[in-house]
Amino acid sequence: QVQLVESGGQLIQAGDSLRLSCAASGRTLNTLHMGWFRQAPGKSREFVADIGWSGITSYADSVKGRFTISRDNAKNTVYLQMNSLKVEDTAVYYCAARMIYKSVYDYWGQGTQVTVSS
Image (cartoon, rainbow, N blue to C red):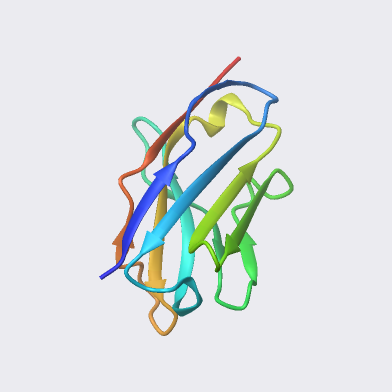
């Protein structure tokens, strides 16, 4: 079983930067594929970024060049650095994990609210 706890969400102004953290417990990060997702009010949850055990990353087109996902295996923590934030980035951000041999995310955090004001 994997537990995920996100932190770092807050109210912030457009153009500013913010870093979200996701602390994992129950398994070591090098056995997990980690992702960030978000859900805006009235919208479906959408993929933001992910990082494999080898460090290979991928991003949604909407955040490419502005967001960076990273992992610190020693701290068992994944980060999402968000720069040049836009009002449309406002959402609840969720951390997710799956075993590296699976294609479906099995574990989810409770979410952290990011609100970007104009």
